[in-house]
Amino acid sequence: MQKLEIKHPVPYPIHLGFALELPQAPGPRALLYDLAVQDYAQQVAARLEIPFSLGLPGGEEAKSLHSYSRVLSWLAQQALPRNTTLYVVGGGCLTDLGGFVAATYLRGIRYISLPTTTLAMVDASVGNKTGLNLPEGKNLVGAFHAPAGVYAELSTLRTLPPQTFKEGLVEAFKHGLIAGDELLVDVAPISPDWEGLEPYLARAVMVKVRVVEADPTEQNERRKLNLGHTLGHALEGATHGAISHGVAVAYGLLYAALLGRAHGGADLVPTVLKLLQWLSPAPPPGLSWEDLTPFLSRDKKKVSQALHWVIPMGMGRLEIRPVPEEVLVGCYQEFLELLASLERSATKPL
Image 1: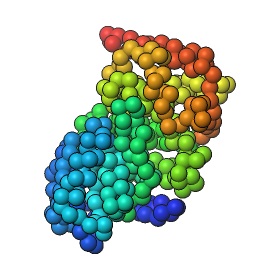
Image 2 (image 1 turned 90 degrees about the vertical axis):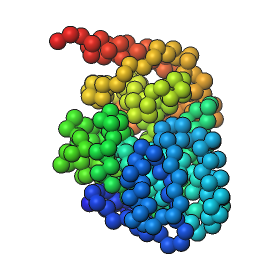
Image 3 (image 1 turned 45 degrees about the vertical axis):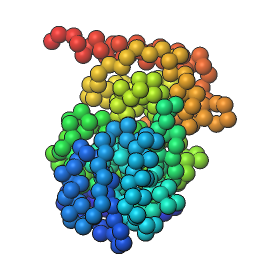
């Protein structure tokens, strides 16, 4: 088992491993879980004697005002008091929803996160961010609210569809680019049964831990974690969620690498293309730059009226700055041409 800890601003443990011992919180307890992992959630409820549980479908729809309202009403209907601990079991979207519920029900209750996907383990469950989507864009509602602990049971990863497992590792790859860690960008050998899975995931999580401790509320350094997410979130919004988060971020990393090359940085395009070849996602629908503009204009990384882009200038070297429109459009055209080339090579007969 890997035992990590966030020490600032609110300390809490992060455990990754197999057959984890879960903490039994004092006082009333409730469980919010993803229906995709209902069996595991029921085991947790039985082990910890949690009397109240609610299952919801996972995915981006969970991060909606409708789901948020439903969970709040459910907690209120059970007359659960302020010393309740909410256990949240599921992927990244359930983690974001559950954390925001905990941040706002009765002005804040404790919660413990039990992530069950690669995406949730290396990213969504760590860092105190919680939130919801609006029709106008991703993560436009949220709060900083630290869990009482994160307990990632790695055996749950064996229940994931293989593509979902791989898509979550895009965030670990991103952490490799941020930290300049060649081991993290080597995703090829990774599978749920890989003997190096536990230390690999812990290594990826530690990148985020260090960044979050340095900048808990995303004033400066933490904005680097948005690498690949600016275009990625716009692709998710413009396609109404038809592109999954992991795939959208992978596309966003390719676009960011093109921006880095255009600004005279090291050429990371081949590195990201290897990720996309390994991921082998369905090709995105044809979207013009104008299709993405409304979503980019509402991105939370805007400063005044200027959208700031996270630009990789090399492994472990990132800059955050506005980019002229003509450069953005030119790189997007390159981006579309590269994706077309990838699609042709994928469909070429052997």
